[in-house]
Image 1: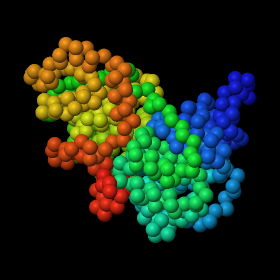
Image 2: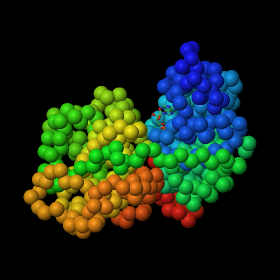
Image 3: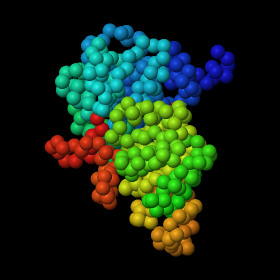
Image 4: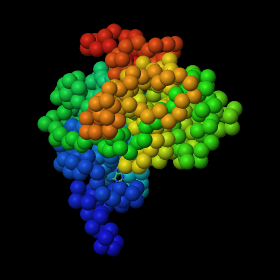
Length: 457
Ligand code: AMP
């Protein structure tokens, strides 16, 4: 290894990662540790619990995967049937698959077994995979509860527990399952809890599950304010199909996510695109896990240029290189706008977000502009109607136009804030629902005074 490489590898090495794991880490392209990794890895290797305040995109997966792998590698392949050495609980299936990929990547060359337990796919194959015992189990809480209840999975030997995106699990009504599952693990376990925000319920959860944790906090990464150019096109609903087709003829749009408000709407947009000669994949809550993963893989590897999605895909998914986000409809919850457009302009890359707005959506447009504290620039108007928004007063206009500190802070907060299903009032029409409401609503008893929004698995 040359000097330069030595200097670089020193970084993860200095955190305590060594041997084949260090080699695989560098092989994965992880040369310099990210702040969350520098903060969390040595503490976990020293046996400490972690309270990590960080979002997807911060590098938090490797921040918990590396110490777990470092401890598991070398334990041998002897495991009790149906048990898991480490358990990672996550809110969504997509995040689970991403985490599994990272574990496999980092465990390259080591004999480490991983398994996924997710709703929406056959449970038999999951049960079979876990039957001999597994090193790392990555699961969404709903399905795992079922398997634990039926004694297909035994958690009493699990000595590493990670709760990822805890605020989102709370938001999706999983918190009681998370408590029960945590309780079922080994009492002397090591625990890491990661959350983008720290609402009271998560503070309480952390207090009950973590022992004297090391708190690692990283600022949300580059916000939308500067990197993403935001444009507005006024178009009636019946004009949007043509406007979209005209836009997509531009080869500068190399990789685009198109957001629709409803599942039905997303299917219709994709169908119209196909008719207009554009190939598009679709991802939403009614699609099977396999179909969702296929769509996402194609989009990630560049074989699919256009991905049509509902808000279910607006958060958490980290696909680099998305050049454009197009909002076919305004979202029902204004904060979803920030999450949607945050799919582009990631890691300092530039990005463009274009919103198509029917005059009937002007109230939603105003709600979005209030959240981002910015007036979107109209780049085209196909309606022939005056701008439906109130004319800004002189002083306000200047303040709203400039992405000043206040606006950046608002974007940052919105990006970091968990998406609340019951915060935004009732959707205006039909099957308009937020991301969690796409899933089957929870109909059980309210046990902890909080009505869960929906279940993912
Ligand atoms: P995560 O927040 O874990 O989803 O990670 C976000 C992205 O950062 C993923 O694409 C990782 O592959 C990447 N990543 C994580 N750690 C590093 C690192 N130390 N150096 C470079 N890329 C990294």
